[in-house]
Amino acid sequence: MNDRYFHPESLMMSHGYKPALSEGAIKCPIFQTSTFVFNSAEEGKAFFEVAYGQREKQPNEELGLIYSRLNNPDLQILEERLCLWDEADECAVFESGMSAISTVMLEFLRPGDVILYSKPVYGGTDHFINKVLPQYGIQGHGFTNSQSEEEIVGGLKEKGWDEKVKLVYVETPANPTNALFDLDICRKVANRLSHSEKEVVVCVDNTYMGPLWQHPLKHGADLVVYSATKYIGGHSDLIAGAVLGKAPFMQRVRTLRTFLGNMAGPWTGWLLMRSLETLKVRMSKQAENTVQVADYLAKHPKVEKVYYLGHLEEDTDQYRTFKKQLSCAGAMLSFDIKGGEAEAFRFLNHLKLIKLAVSLGSTESLAEHPATMTHSDVSREDKESIGITEKLVRLSIGVEHPSDIIWDIEQALEHC
Ligand SMILES: *Cc1c(COP(=O)(O)O)cnc(C)c1O
Image 1 (cartoon, rainbow, N blue to C red):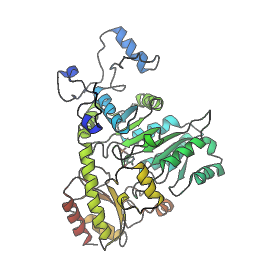
Image 2 (image 1 turned 90 degrees about the horizontal axis):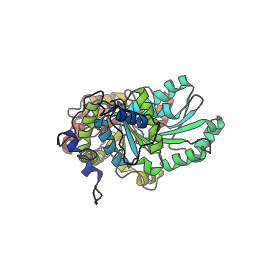
Image 3 (image 1 turned 135 degrees about the vertical axis):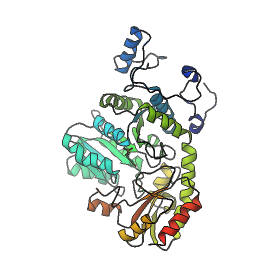
């Protein structure tokens, strides 16, 4: 179509949409419809043959529209646009981040299998791995970013679980402390546990950095998952998720989605397309603001420590991983306030502009207390080893004027 390579942000307004198919409307309408009319019985038959995998698509054949649980233009166009950022073959959009994550786990794990996962992971993911999957005979084995390839594999061998691992699941940077995992190590571990009869799949939750600043498929991941509720949606007004990756894996994910019926609806698809148009400007502004907030906090006498990727010490493994995997320090940070829960709560209760709420990545700045909110379900032992203490406060920085954000933090800290 074009002889020029356009950057993803230049294509977010138009890619995959043909105005002529919608009365010339410049924007994709909301296809609020459950089913689609076939031109003939033969056409209906042909569409189903492809949709149910009874035959391969012909070279120029497009999958026809059948029924909105299988396909709908608002989802298909959105999925094509999301593929551009991660350079993925395919994408499937879900009704939440959790439905994207749980569908991947259910597709790639069977009774008797083990999931190897990075610690910490998002609270809902942790619950699914440790409370839901065991009911289906699937066990979880966690690893931290201080463990080497040898130590991770050794830990599995001790339990006799190395043969059972089918899925390596990684969240990096980890929430809420921004701990980084080296994806090369994760890929190497998966390769060591794979053989001719068993391919271990690597899946990365890229919610914190994606789709702009980290592209796990380029670092050996097979699949990437998102809570599209966060940066991709970006306005705190919807819940959605996405899975992206290589075609053979995506085929399996998409098929299970069809039968679990947990795809997003057309209205959510339309809202996400609208969000994608401003994704780059929003995230860039958020990251710029975060540099200023982090620098301010680092100098504040009531702040003990700031966890921000832009402040990593050079000549450390974390810094090397950062340089290799990420193109930006992001817009999430957390900090230890001097004192404990009482001081952290006083800070949160006195904020005037920044909202006290969980979630992240939206246009407005948000603050929360991980130990008693997002991570309250994590065991005391894990909380301690990961650094989720009573004095930790997490901030998601928005697009407001940076001096207003800093003013708010300054006046709230005066009460601590
Ligand atoms: C929010 C979040 C999820 C869950 O997504 P939902 O859209 O709330 O279902 C998963 N992973 C991470 C890192 C998240 O922040």
